[in-house]
Image 1 (cartoon, helix red, strand yellow):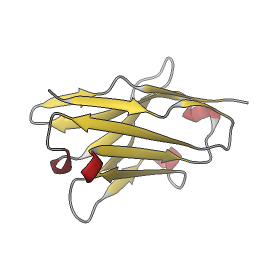
Image 2: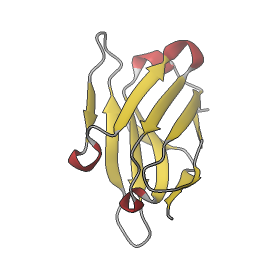
Image 3: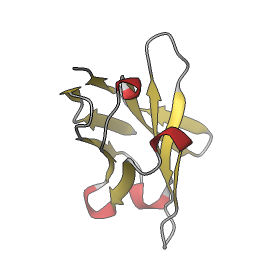
Amino acid sequence: QVQLVESGGGLVQPGGSLRLSCAASGFTFSSYDMRWYRQAAGKERELVAGITSSTPRRTNFRDSVKGRFTISRDNAKNTVYLQMNSLKPEDTAVYYCNAHIFTNDYWGQGTQVTVSS
């Protein structure tokens, strides 16, 4: 069965950094695009970044995180990462890993990121 497990969240001061990881299992990870979403309290879930399965890889970021966040993947480890630098309070949210496989969307349980002084 498909499983996505996020880790790496926590409490960080503004300007700090975190690296999130998403460990995938139950499917051929290297064949699928992967995405990171986030959902802040009282807000709708929004796409943060995506990375393709293709070679060369293609990445996309929402405007508010461009230049600060980097998405990458290690197919040998079935893991996708989100490196977050220069964090701002408005980055506070639960971050979710996502994969679209066949006709289904799969989600992890999420990891909380809190940016506060």
